[in-house]
Image (cartoon, rainbow, N blue to C red; front, side, top):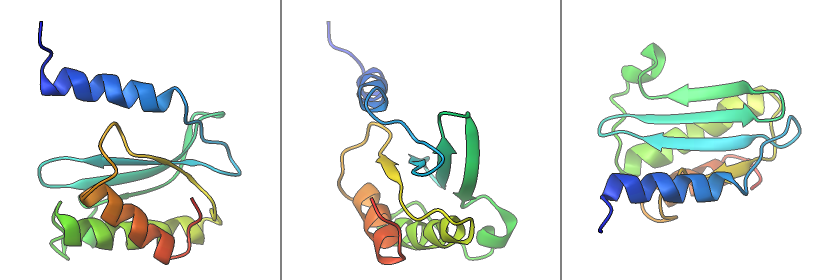
Length: 119
């Protein structure tokens, strides 16, 4: 029986998460796109702690009217990388959340690299 797109996405996400583990020296950069917003977290999986985060819902970012498109993803990647560098995070493991490394996901990752994060 055919699975729904959502079920297939969840399976892809868990398949990726089995292999990716964030540490305090090299946290996991987790990306989530909703219909309108972008959420980025830097997670230490060993201690179960979020070290830094960025979201287009936050009040200081909401004023910029950041959208969940290619341009918004690039801007979000740059801003998230700046926040991570401010918390002394230089190297990360990229968790694409079951999405293909294409489009918005690729734009966010490339912008974060250009801002100074190492993948």
